[in-house]
Image (tube, rainbow, N blue to C red; front, side):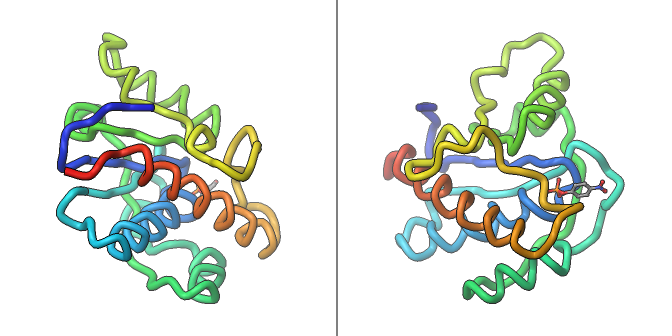
Length: 161
Ligand code: 4NP
């Protein structure tokens, strides 16, 4: 498990930053708030592509999240190399996100900050958080279940200040 300073700066990364990583950010923010640990964390999300820059979360993801009681927030942005310096823990949704984020770390000196999200899941053994973009609404619901599991694991793994 990663060892990070406090406040812990956590960045969730997917491809477009409109489905998986903004949902992870929303879910993790709520978990942190419910635990009364807001001052322990800085939380953000980003995409490896800038195609959806400035867009709110995908309406299908928002619909699934709202049904589970979450409040929607956030606008898409692209990840930049400076994010690898700024954040302590960078969590990627699938193998291609992991490869793309590692590629931004030109000297490979920051690789130890970059972790696959599924490694934090406690109740699921999925190999990745699947991209729900081209699928149906049920795919979004499954992503939320995975994200809730792993976000709980991240919170457990990062010690209280
Ligand atoms: P995300 O989903 O990476 O979870 O935000 C996607 C969003 C956009 C696209 C693909 C996946 N796209 O091809 O534009």
